[in-house]
Image 1 (cartoon, rainbow, N blue to C red):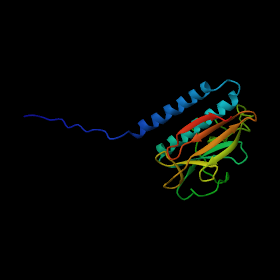
Image 2: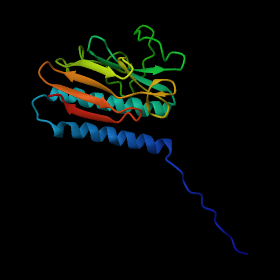
Image 3: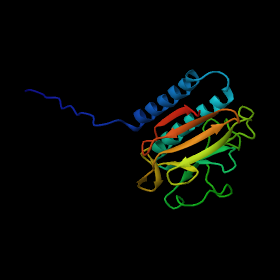
Image 4: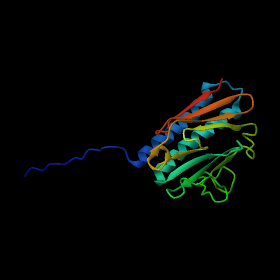
Length: 189
């Protein structure tokens, strides 16, 4: 009697493999940014690395939780926060009193575990501010869907966007590619 083994091929990546890849890319980005610049604006560079890392985290957390994640940039330029968003709340304007903040898994930011980056109370970034936010939909937010793509409405991919950080002397722009959310960091001349 002859026995045959049936082998099944894989047609993609597991969720865990995708999350590991995104995490490795975030770490690589945080390590590369300082090597692309001089050392004169380390505070501003650190803020840019923090933003790149938070964009990557928001994207991977959206995939892992199978929920929307939104980075909202405060109107006064003091920083950003990460929010949980649903289909029902997608179009709601940001209100800190009713917003559902995502939890900070490292508990390193202020706000009782809420995922909030506030330059005004974080002594690492006292001179830094969010100088400009340019999203394709005109909002001050970057939202990722359950597949990790950037969206401007449920089922509608977002166009390109950028966030510019400044310390009053120098500026860095973090550009986010449409749909994929790929990040590019550059010094603003």
